[in-house]
Image 1: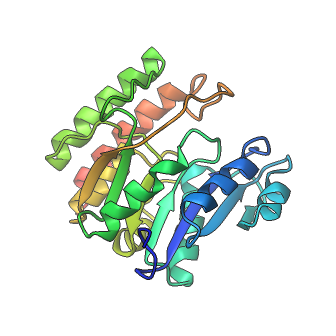
Image 2: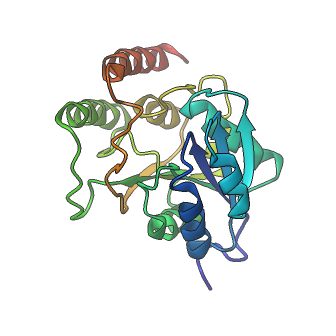
Length: 237
């Protein structure tokens, strides 16, 4: 029996913004790895053929009228999961960086009750994943902060490749969940709420398009916003 068969409903949430070149092949590979799961693409205001190609590939698609941000797209998926009584949510990006062959690893951890949130880390094991210097420095900084505040080692605080239990999903639909960059600040929130976090090694591929939500001047805003968000989380009861 494959992981998850007969052991709870599984939803795979894929936020996507202008991913017409990758979305169809990604959905096909995801369905091959977890045929028992439902695939939900949250089309975050794309102006290309992302929606049409996702539907043609057999995914359920929910579309935002305009681009609302990565965090909002994830929350749309979480709310769908709760509405239709899914037990587990796996989330991955729509640009093809996250290797679907790691879905089973993530699911096994959360399904086995070892954690409420399982983070797929590109830096555990012998992956040799490379990132630009400035982004790597930000990862180290917020990985250090998240590790310090959670009392456990966090190697990849910006990873969007995750598995969540229903309890974690219920927490993430709150208004405190950020609409733009849900990264280290969310991990701090989850820990303070008593949810268990675990990292496992996963496969990730380089971003072939050279596009990132942390590109341009965005890293400066990201650092400011993340520090502010973490500080506010610590002040919040």
